[in-house]
Picture 1 (cartoon, rainbow, N blue to C red):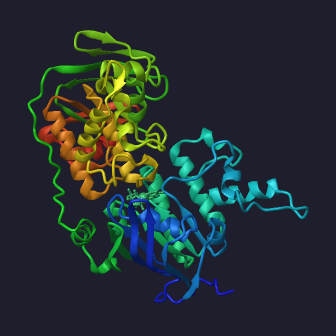
Picture 2 (spheres, rainbow, N blue to C red):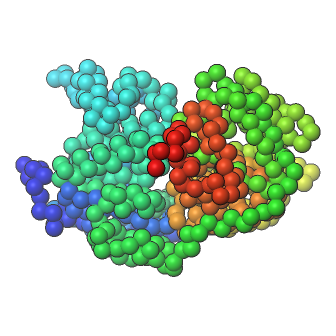
Picture 3 (spheres, rainbow, N blue to C red):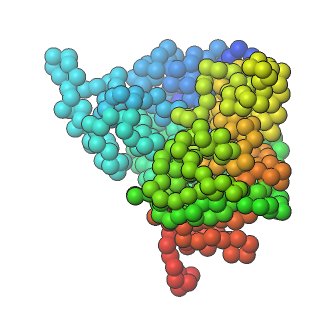
Length: 509
Ligand SMILES: Nc1ncnc2c1ncn2[C@@H]1O[C@H](COP(=O)(O)OP(=O)(O)OP(=O)(O)O)[C@@H](O)[C@H]1O
Ligand SMILES: [Mg+2]
């Protein structure tokens, strides 16, 4: 009855105190506190592995804390199961969303709490009606009857959000919700957060993006290495202060690209076309070059990259490496030719989560570490250690399964694995998505150093500072075509955005 949305905004709905969570070899949470207030967004910030997702799992009944207490409206509670947390009005959109590929969208939204007929059967018509209502409320144009596996990642995320909304929640938790969304969908998500706030819900928002934290959060809490560092109001803090709290030092956010001397062409692409996704793509990539690909989501960048490594076939076009004309028909042929691709959706094509880190890293490089067919474990370790250290991977040891790492650290494993194959050309699709601000510098520094040693990089990124800071040259794509090729003084945030959005007249200024 108290759910009127008029709850006292100075009293937390949910409060966690002295929470400890120990995993074998890792104290993921070491006595942390967190408070969530009605009608307010609290941003939880911290490096990869700081304990953010672990606290989310603790307060949604997925993990049990070893010590500490959870207070709901000031009263101690326990959530022995996820269902119990849901019943108490706590719902979460997790970083690795647990959805079911074989079920329909509506079934995914209502699994575990489907509306029932008076005979106790699942009321499919009602379920579909309510699913449609929720999807409409967030402007998601998704058919509730379609199978989940037929959706793209962004749509799957919207299904996860709809699922969270289908529970009449008092507390909504979002763990890096915008990592998989396009610009337009991100704006819609912000509006959705505003709506939830207006309804008096307490929101926990986890993100590595400072612009969005400042855009939507009212409060912040910072964790470092499983410990509570501080909290307060966003209005009282600067980005620099937050970064300092997060990493315990100030971070030089200047991108460290060294202007390398570019070598001979390693890859020439001529007239690559596809019936629907892209048209007449051509460019030359030189040894040691970092070539940025900028564009709005949907510009065809990822689709083109996928055809370049043989996941899909171009309808026209050739690709030359050195003097050879290559037609790459499969990712295996691409690897053979020395081109590797680290996709944006690293979950799917990423790591084998049950296998230890070192084996994941060395898996595609086995030829390099095996002699006469025998794996050289020491060699494997050495290779894995070198690459993971350079990418600032945080793990108890290289023996632990990738599945036990934090989301951002899992991504670093995938990047390490492809870099370790020592390709001629690496295509990185949104390389620092989900990677914290401190590690980002490490990733950029390593990229830059490898380029200086002769690696050629194609970097697809939607982040303007990353594109500007890292690229020797930038290709801008719009609606499947190259609309600009920029370097030197022509590169600026304005020129990038203007070309990407198709604003041609200078009068826009
Ligand atoms: N199931 C598990 N088994 C063992 N260790 C785990 C498990 N889950 C998390 N950890 C460890 O707990 C620590 C905190 O991980 P957590 O996923 O909470 O980090 P995070 O702050 O969400 O990071 P990210 O920004 O990368 O998502 C990490 O050291 C991680 O390796
Ligand atoms: Mg996480």
